[in-house]
Image (tube, rainbow, N blue to C red; front, side):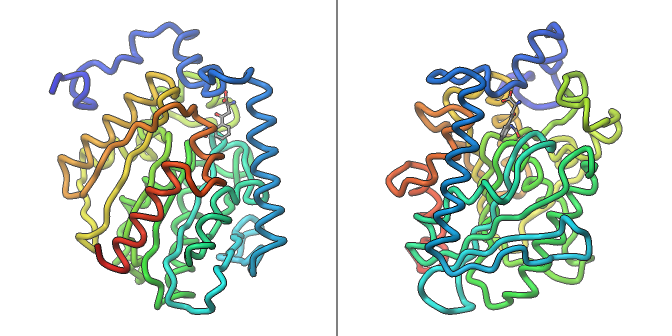
Length: 309
Ligand SMILES: N[C@@H](CC(=O)c1ccccc1NC=O)C(=O)O
């Protein structure tokens, strides 16, 4: 393994980039191959919107369930036909660079997953400028504690996050749950096209509404934190799957690979997958389709764990 890929030890490649190049590397819409940058954002939001409308029209659901006292502490739950509290839960954290996104247009995977007996939870959090990174991490932590308390008989919590949501999901690998008083029944993590080292973000316009200092960025970087303080799963069967799209930018590829390496060097059972022929947005919106590779990966992982191979 070469030093640059070891994450942190060699000189990080982004440090040698011009401001323009760094900005481009962290602008996912500029790497999309099929649509223009604006068209892709419209399509992304439209598909999310329609999937959510469909989910609400066709599935038994609990909407705007408060997981805390804050206005933004809300989640939506979509149930499969079988009425049971012993269900696997797929918990989704949407992306949007911690400044956009909403649970009301992020229910992509509800159709294909509820059809197979999985309950799907979409977690809302306060994006910037209302929320800080620390607040968002705290919100996702509290949403998980709430779900474990509400559904103590669940057949596994599978946490899936996209982009900035993959970052928030990855931060859950660092929470001391014993100290929180409740240990969630985590069986899997699906980290899709995420950012795990926030330091380069500080030098891009993404940081304008976030106002992260270097210290904030490091405190909220699972890449840094896991290298310094390795953690381990409560359940040794818990897998972490780090996934990136073929058409994600080189920096997104590097971030995913470095984080996978750090997980593997620690005590986590991790794997790395590059999904062919998808960009940063298709990678998640295609979860509306049952025959999509990532939908099948989610289902296979969930049913291997709860029903045996
Ligand atoms: N302005 C960004 C938008 C973006 O990054 C994004 C949009 C929706 C969902 C996730 C995203 N990226 C990371 O959270 C872009 O250039 O693509």
